[in-house]
Image 1 (cartoon, rainbow, N blue to C red):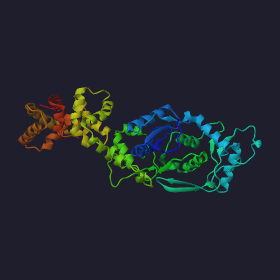
Image 2: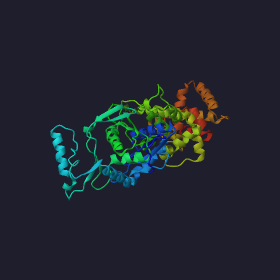
Image 3: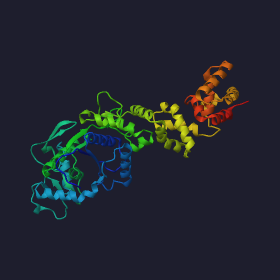
Image 4: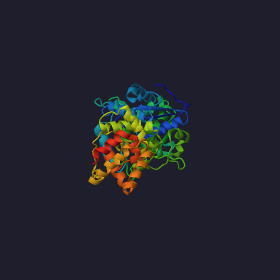
Length: 474
């Protein structure tokens, strides 16, 4: 990788561990990094932190890339894989050892456990006590392979001017000598992250505030290597609607689950943007406007709460704003999955035409798909319980009479159908609802649907009459 130490251009990164799906919190982190870089004409990169070979899977890597692509948050370059940089990580440790800023530690597992137990018994923070820091390595036991530890500054403080949290500091005596290389020679996460961020030329790191304690150690490592540290911005985590840490019951699902639930990527991005970031009282902010408005100063310091109702409202807005053609294409896979077949071209055209009556009623693509299914069924339709009740004997007889009136309609359109039915209703001295509800049951198999006149207009003469005749009684 290219090594870079001076900041000419903003470069951010999103660095997920591929041990599972792309988590909703991770998606928000990716979005903030993307916006921060792009709003300043910078570069946004993706690094897959796959050093935990036991837990990293190809399926997870694919799921993460897939989720990022769906949200429009794929990196500007091909992803970097941390596991491929291990030789470079070890090379940096050799430099630290040569400069006297790192040392081998031969503490046995038993000694480390004893150290932990003693610290707990004395009510101290569990930390490595530096037992091999200044010891003569001629004393090293032959049967123990050492780990390599960083020689952390013993005095003073480490300070970070965090872009979100403000100035944060910690006394160095609270930070023990962290492990850089394990006894098998593999690099630790803390080392790999610093080396990769430096080599990738990362200038700004935006991530969850659960990484804030890591930042102090990473800042020290940058200093001991003589590298310019990136600027850090630690954003508060997302909580559930009840204020507790986000879990699956709150919506801590993979991005793929939101796609499967029928949310649009634009809606999810807008919703995630507003989780912890704000600009005046604006709620609906598309990606172009977000690039104009985004500023890291707009990120709040307290955790945000995940709210499915609000996400539904965002999704409904973005669905309404799509063209009927594009909304049909988004909803199509959900319809075809429910029907277990593909729609023909004529049916797709019918679906586009049906959007006028369908789109305002649905909050998700799944709701839209479910409310449209009756259009693609063949007679006889399955009737739900309320539709069965509406189609009692009297109403079936009445529908047979109505069918005769409808067959005489020459201009099959919403307005002329409404006129015909209104004349029929007047002749029977009935209210419109008394006729429209049984018509709805006959046309859709349900008691809930768009306007019956819209439905007949969309279905066309032949299909509409076939459905009403199917349930009529002479």
